[in-house]
Image 1: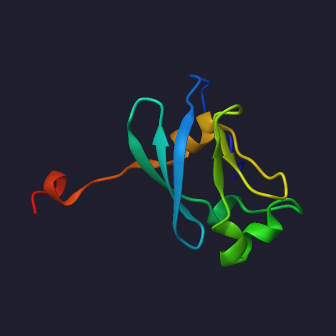
Image 2 (image 1 turned 180 degrees about the vertical axis):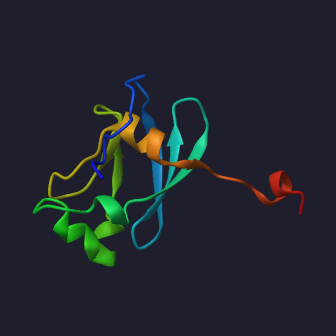
Length: 97
């Protein structure tokens, strides 16, 4: 499966990012919407290999100029792909708890 498979460009921008467990990110998009993504299936190739190390993965930052997430080694991901492959974050009150 290719990471960008089935993704339409709609110009999403990542405002903030929170690494929560190895390979999972909570993303805040420009709309104020929070979404969760599991990046494990997409960490292939030399630039993404360091992201398999949990301490390196946690060094993720939101780049306001690029509108996406970046790591110190230059790895980044298309924000439209991040949006399309993520799921909405559900808070306890949204789950009926």
